[in-house]
Image 1 (cartoon, one colour):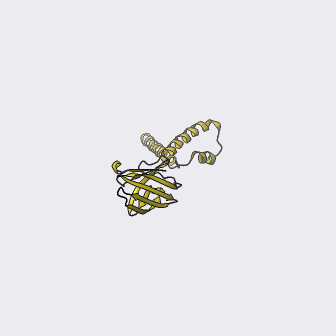
Image 2 (tube, one colour; image 1 turned 90 degrees about the vertical axis):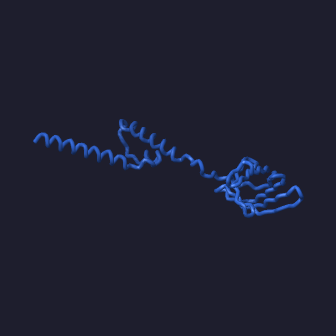
Image 3 (cartoon, rainbow, N blue to C red; image 1 turned 180 degrees about the vertical axis):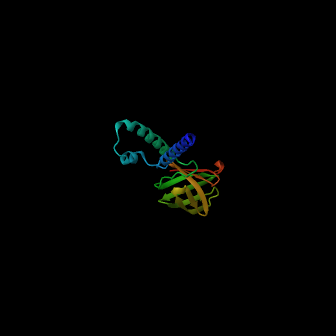
Length: 160
């Protein structure tokens, strides 16, 4: 009978330990550190160092979650108004930007001139020149215009 009692005691202890371990895991770990400290009831000073370690670990995991995704577009400045000029295969390019629209003027070497309407989508780094969708980035006083495949030979650099 003592063997059964001992076995039952061990199984009961294991079950209680498992329940305690599982209940500790269900606490929210993504809660900001400041909220955790405010919501915790006042405790004895002897227990505070262990909680600070937990908060530090949670703060570290929150910082990792805030890291930007590599392939996600970075929002471009919305105030890019002005006149930009540059070259594209011998053609002189003039881009006049006002707000989220503008005009793209190509002056070809033979004197022909083409004017196209431009629309900017800063959140997605896209600009539509006539019917062509391009990727753009703002670098100080420059706008760099790329094809969707980002082929360096097709890149156009326009300077304000």
